[in-house]
Image 1 (cartoon, rainbow, N blue to C red):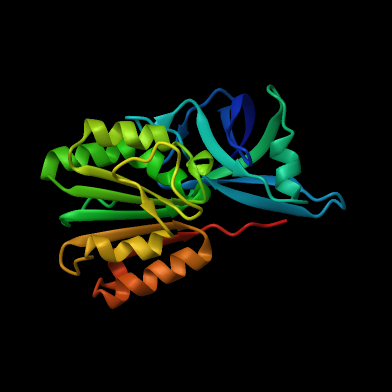
Image 2: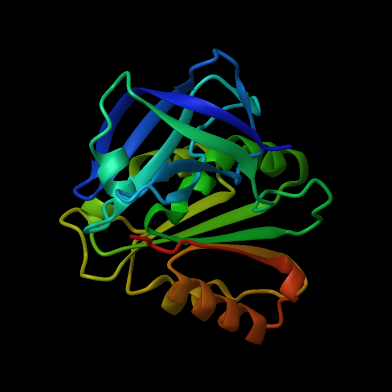
Length: 247
C-alpha cells in the first residue's frame, strides 16, 4: 500500500542542461520499498494554496527493493510549479511524498525471449532502476533486452554512460541512443539517427517472443504502440507509461 512521508534532499546534480537528478532520504529514517518501474508522487501547493502533485519514476539502482535513498530525475518546465519547487530545493530541505504507485514493472511470469524498452527524456528512469532485475532475468532464462532511448543530442542522454557500461557487461543487452538532431562528436556503432519509433522496424518486433515497454513523451508512446500493435504484438505485451509535462 502507498505510504505518505517526507523526503529530505541529500544530494543532487545536473544530468543535462534542463534535467536535475535528486537523491532523497526519508525524514523518518525508514527505508522505501518499491518494485523497479514504480513511481512516487510529490505533494505541494500552487501559489494560491491549491494542492497539487507530480509523479516521478524512482531511478534508484539497487539489488534490493527496499532502498535507503530515493532517486528521481526532474525536467525543467518553463513556468512550472514543480520546477520551481524541485529545481530550487536546497540540500537538507524536504518535500512531502507518497508511494509507491504503478505496475510498469518486470513481471515474474513473463516467458518472452526479448524485452524491447523504448524511452524518451526522463522516461528512461524506470529502466535505470530495472537494470539489476534485467541482469537477473538475462542470466536465468537467457532473455535478450534492447533499449531504444531517444534524445535530441548527446547532452540530453540521461544516464547514457551507465547504459553503455551495462551493455558492455551483459552480452544480451543492447543500447541504442537514438539522436534526432544529428550524430554526436564521437559516434558509437550502436547509435541511431532519428526518432525511436523510426528505429523500431530495425528490431523486427516479434509477436510471439517480444514484450515491449514504452515510457516518455505521449506522442512517442502512442506512435510506438501503434507500430508494435501493427507488428502483431498483443496489447497485453505492450506496457505503457506516459510522461505529461504539467505547469
